[in-house]
Amino acid sequence: MFIQTEDTPNPNTMKFLPGREIAPESPREFATPEEAEASLLARELFAVDGVTGVFCGADYISVSKDETIGWPHIKPALLGTIMDVLQSGATLFEADGGEADFEPDSGPAKEIKEIIDTRVRPAVARDGGDIIFKGFDEKTGIVALVMRGACAGCPSSTMTLKSGIENLLKHYVPEVREVVAVG
Image 1: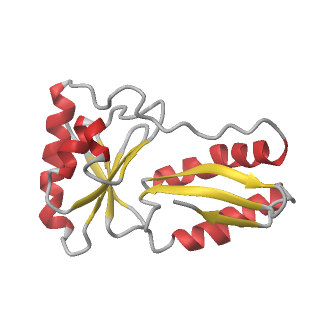
Image 2 (image 1 turned 135 degrees about the vertical axis):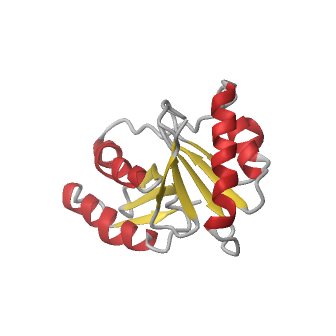
């Protein structure tokens, strides 16, 4: 098995591409070792000293590390762990581990979610992250998004959120006034 790696805009997150599906139905995020108990893969990655987060996309794994540890020190252990778990053939996630997205019925919220899903999510997935629509307040015009994987904590995430996503949404959905990241 050959696992490719890619740097992400977040210097403390690296994207691992094992050439197979990881979480094709629903991205999975594990921000703590306790959350990782629901996944063999995440549990084993958190066992590597310095891992601070694991995000599993459709065909990739983004691993975040402590900023005091260099990639040359941690990357070989991460590659070995990913290879061992994937080659074991074990189930990667417990059932119902995915996060259910908010499903708007109609109006601006539906348009916003469609733009996020078709234009924004594919772009941020290339950088090892994900952005989830959480809601739209029609009174204030504020869109709430959750940034995950490499997007969470990325130095350029604020610029992406404000200059990129906010401008895009304002262009297509005039009711949008602001985009904010929520936890």
